[in-house]
Each structure stands twice: as C-alpha cells, then as structure tokens.
Image 1 (cartoon, rainbow, N blue to C red):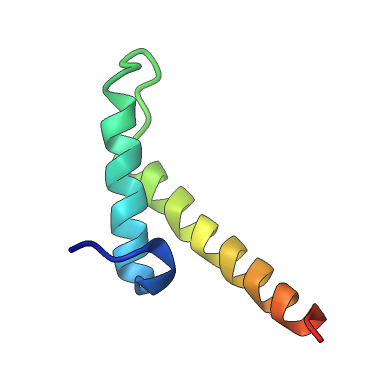
Image 2: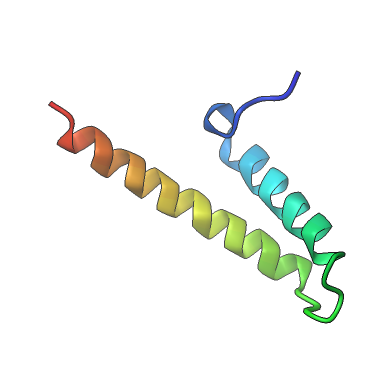
Amino acid sequence: MTKSLAEMSRKEFVYECASRALAASFSNPAAKPSIASMVRDADKLWDELEEWNNTRQESSP
C-alpha cells in the first residue's frame, strides 16, 4: 500500500518526486537534468505546497 502525497513526510515526498522526475527524464535523454536539480526542485515544491496549504487554511472560515 502506498501513501498519498498528503500523507508523506518531507523526505518521502522529495524522494518520490525526484524518483518520478528521474523516470520521466529517461523519455527525453536530450534534456540531461541532474539528479541534484530534481531533488532541489522537489524540495522547493514541498515548500510551495506547504505555503499554499497554510494560506488555504488561514482563509477557511
């Protein structure tokens, strides 16, 4: 059984997103993104989703 993204810890989320990005990169080998950039992007996405979620909760009645 796999967790939904909302149930994951930051570390699990970053790993999952980076591994999906790596798998997707195989379909476009000309792009040649680095694994480090995939991890940084996933970590930044976590921050952005946390900010969005906090803003959403503050605006809820």
